[in-house]
Every structure is written in structure tokens, then in C-alpha cells.
Length: 332
Image (cartoon, helix red, strand yellow):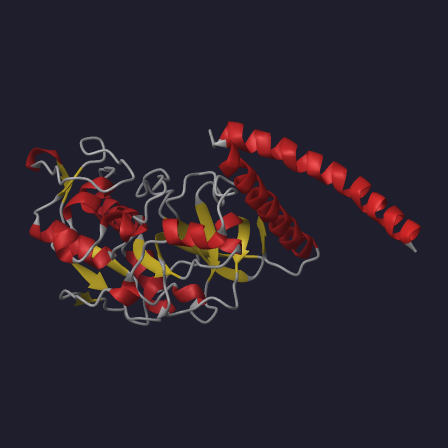
């Protein structure tokens, strides 16, 4: 009996060794690609987290390859983070904990005789800046807000100007935002209105941490005169807004394990919430792929995440992950 147990243990170790070597090799490559450095004790912990995340990705992709999932996953720069650590750090939309509201206009849906296009991609029209990087700061709300205003400013002036998220992180605390600890896009739009503008990205660069307000009137890149809220939960209204007006700020539930490592395909999560939203992003278009409708969503986690920084989120699928729950855009 003891001999049998010993033989089983030796066989398991022999099988595990090649996988461990593979993980170690990928770990060294991961550190090099993403410029990761750790103290020895932390490195042992982060390697363990990396190995566990690698296993989760492989298990999911096995289901994807069998046709049991509609999207696949890949390792990215979040590979050394525990999931709860990731959510706490990166997902900074705080809609459920911020009760202060400002007066918003209501989006008026076009008449039923207006035919909307089957697909829209505002990137091809020049209304979307390159994918940005919020770093380890819960400022997704600021990136969503600037993205929406960049699009509206482009439609009005024909000029695509990259706007300063740091300006919002540092200067909109009095409006209910909390810098790297989260905020709301509508609060950002209200601040920009009352402030008579927001500085350009070039003049007020991003630091991924809270700082003193350094807004400069001479560096304003765009203004807004208020904002519009789209009827909550109405995907048809969101489609009409995106089709006729441009990119729209939205919030969504991005708290699942899979979202951290989304790679490509149409994201469907039957467990995600339509009310408990934690991440601000930007809808820049919509379309249909293999019979499945989708929203084209711009994130702020670099091009290493998703489809070069973008994702396809299921559309016309019961307000998937709250895509239409808290959608808005600025007036210019």
C-alpha cells in the first residue's frame, strides 16, 4: 500500500514538473514584458497568483474551444493580481454609494420613422482618441467622461483633442468625485460646465494618483454646457444616442473573474448585475457578429487588455451587465 502511494506521488510530481517549468518560463517573460519587479517574498506570492490566474484562463478557454463560451481570455498585465485586489484597484465607478445628483437633460429618442444604421463605429469617423491607461488608480469614471466629451467636441469642431483625466481626478472633489477612489461621469460633466472647461491631456498629463488641482484656464481643450441622461435600461435609446450623437459614457458590472482577462469575442455573463455597477467605460459603436448583437466598448486598461483595449459586449440581451442602466453624454 505504501509503495502504491509512493508511486502515485512520484507520477504526479513527474507530471507537475513540466507544467511548473512552463509557468516559470511564462512568469519570467511576464515580468520582462510588463516591467514587473518584486521583493523576494512578494515575488513568491505573485508567482502563485500568476499560476492560479493562468489555470483559470486555460480552463475557460477549453470551454471556449468547445463552443461553450462566446469569448476567450488571455494573460495580460493584471496577471499578478488577486481578483478582489484587481476589482478594488481598477473598478472606480461608485454609482451606488454617491447620492448627490445634478440636473440632467433627458435624451429624446428619434421618431420611429428614423432608420438607424445596422452598425456604427465612431473610431472610423475620427471621434475617438487612442486607448489610454488609468494605471492602478480607480479613475475609470474620468476616462469615460473625457472620452464622451472628446467625441462631442470632435462632432462640433471637427478637432479631436485628447482631454485631461488628471484634471478631473485632482479638481472635481467638491462635485462628489473621489479621485483614484472613484467617481461618476455626470459629476465630471457638471464640474466641466461650472469650471468653463477642462484642460488638454498634453498640458495636464496623467499621473495615476491624486494630486493638487493645477487647472489652467489658458490650457482648456473643451467645454460642456451640461449633460444628458439616457433612459435607464433602454438599449434602444442607447443605440439611437450612439448612432446619432457619438460615443456615450456608460457604467457596467465588470466584477467577474473573466472580465479581468477578457481577450476577444462577445462578452456574455449571465451572472453579472444590471444594477450593481462598478466600472466606467465608453460605448463607441455597435454591430452584429455571427448573429449576435454587440456593443463596441472602449476601456482604459491599455491595448494589452481585450481587443487592443476594446471589447464587444452582448447587445439586446436583457441589458447585459447594466450597459444601459447609467448612460450619459455631455452637451457642447
